[in-house]
Amino acid sequence: MKNFELWNPTRLVFGENRIEEVNKHIPADAKNIMVLFGGGSVKKNGIYDLVHTALKDRNVIDFGGIEANPRYETIMKARTLAIKENVDFLLAVGGGSVIDATKLLCVAIPFTESEPWDIIKKGLGKKVTEAVPFGTILTLPATGSEMNSGSVVTREETKEKLAFGGPLCFPKFSILDPRVVASLPQRQIVNGITDAFTHVLEQYITYPADAPLQDRIAEGVLQTLVEIGPQVIANPGDSTVAGNFMWCCTMALNGLIQQGVPTDWATHMIGHELTALYEIDHARTLAIIGPNLYRVMFNNKKDKLAQYGERVWGITEGSIEHRAQATIERTVEFFHSMGIDTKISDYTEDYAEVAKTIVDRFADRKWLGLGERQDISLEKVQEIVEMSI
Ligand code: NZQ
Ligand code: ZN
Image 1: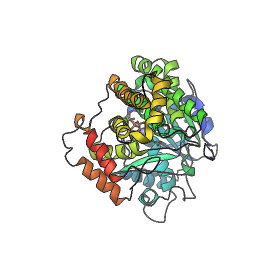
Image 2: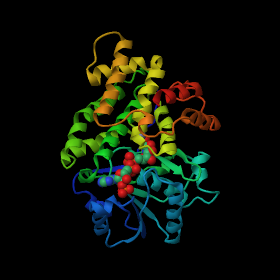
Image 3: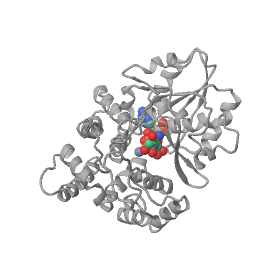
Image 4: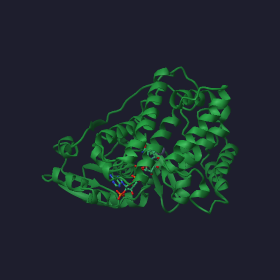
């Protein structure tokens, strides 16, 4: 196991009927609270009303209309309003998109050096020294954004989808109330399972690193998702199952399982391009790319693939290579069993240039070696994407 430092300051407030407590988690001296939300689901399912009732004695400024895969341009509109209204606390009410938008907003409000896109483009996330504090009410278990300091934002103008993060981007608190799952369309539940599942794989399907506890926690999250995934799809209104699903998604990407071990993240980096180019749901891009990345990088990953196959899927017969191959196939079957298509051509007909476009973008950004060994070269990226068409 490698040396590590673990710091996570987010207060997690879990359980039914806890949205009603939101007021007490917001500092008493916060004068102007901006409530951020998406395209309207919170108004239909009653969460918006719960939040506004809980904050009835506060000065609240609404900012709605944050799109899935949040746009920089929209976040800049929120910034203008927040500055005008002297906003001193932000409350994100939504899924990963609303939370990620709020993370950029929190550091963009006091940022005056240049245009706030530079925070992302020039990697200033870890250097900025000022931020407006924020909390979240999670409405879609998937990304783990509610308990990490990362964010992914799309710039419409250039069709770039890029990640950034930094210590000021941890939420002060996040409320995980399982009641929110009841109104989720099946498509979003399935996306959530797939995203969380892949988050674990990105931090686990690398090479053995003498970190048996991280391995067991990772496998525990995967096993639990396999076990309860079908139950939450069948009955999203069951708060017990929904709560366990939420907790899995948070645990998959709150920083814990990545400590002391190598991590990959190339599936996400390639996947983000597919969303930027074709607006394919984030989780689905991972189901497209992940298995092919394992096929191309097979020698690097076969030991952990075989371990994952044995411990999560009960694949115990044959050589390491045989088990590792069978495990990749089993993982694809799992995605298919939830109705997730795993080829780019299932989503778009406009794929002739896709591999070249992605490789050119990575070359421009000097992303020349990805993955846990930094040996996923541009040629390998090309091979992975071509295999995914
Ligand atoms: O916009 P509204 O009307 O609210 O509808 C949303 C949206 O259309 C809907 N929804 C959310 N909660 C609902 C609901 N519908 C009914 N009932 C509810 N309770 O679901 C749709 C998708 O929402 P979105 O927030 O986009 O989904 P998700 O949470 O999957 O977030 C995806 C974004 O997060 C980024 C992705 O790249 C993508 O931009 N990620 C963020 C990460 C992070 N910050 O750590 C890591 C991830 O790997 C990921 O990259
Ligand atoms: Zn993800």
